[in-house]
Image 1 (tube, rainbow, N blue to C red):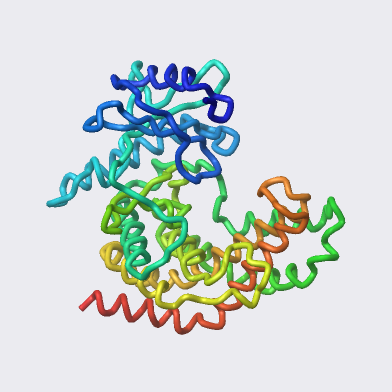
Image 2 (cartoon, rainbow, N blue to C red):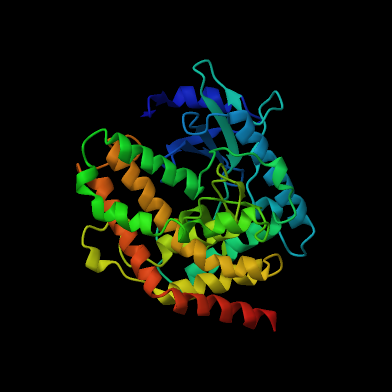
Length: 375
């Protein structure tokens, strides 16, 4: 069998480059990620460890040595912190890299591809969509704990793997350049969306402004807090945060807002019927409770106040990204219809509208939860 043009023999050869002495029972593509190619390596001994072999997408992550240095720093810090917590299990609660036989964190093949291996965490599962309040609570707890464990890691040590990833100023500048170029003649089709975005540029720049003013601390955050980046155990309790390639300096509100963007929406990210887009407030409240339970020890009051700004900002950023790609001819995001990116942008902007209408209610949930935890 071949996997993305790789034969089993090729994969076995790659695995042999790492410190793995295992008879392989099976090799199967694994996960729903769209960036890296991942394979589960199953041990013929059911009591032995399984592994994940991963090809790093060096077209997205252009400096793989930098990325892997980040990963080593972050994983090392997480394990040291977990070792100090009674009852914690560092090997189960964070990822473990397997070195190459040359004591390196990754292997580069003759075709210029970069490979790495992690221990597979047996007995875990993940969900693409949040279905219950317990799941939302556990997702919030997982990302809050993740940020808390990294809150004392020097931000200068972790470098940007994707520069300006959540930088709204950079995103808006790129959108304006695309509007000015109007490469495929679509600007006339999206004037209401452009006006909506431009009316909110100052409001959506508040987190950046607070950071520049020194009243909102820069932290090491995940930057891609969709729910399937949390592994849960058999009882749906949070166990481990995964997919750490975008771990970079940023603001805590970015991670909070990115989680809420998908958890609170009652419809799909690209829902064509905008009337179906609504807010699932109970899931929002459950996530906020889980998150703040873990994050209360490091968040300042200004940081807590910034969370609602992140809730509004992240779907706005996503809309800007979708619209930019649409006006540029659909080069970045995969599309299924000619106007798919416009459909996505409209759906995200509708979500922003709904969030704005409920902003005060959502803010009060955050503040009430925070105050209750302080007592």
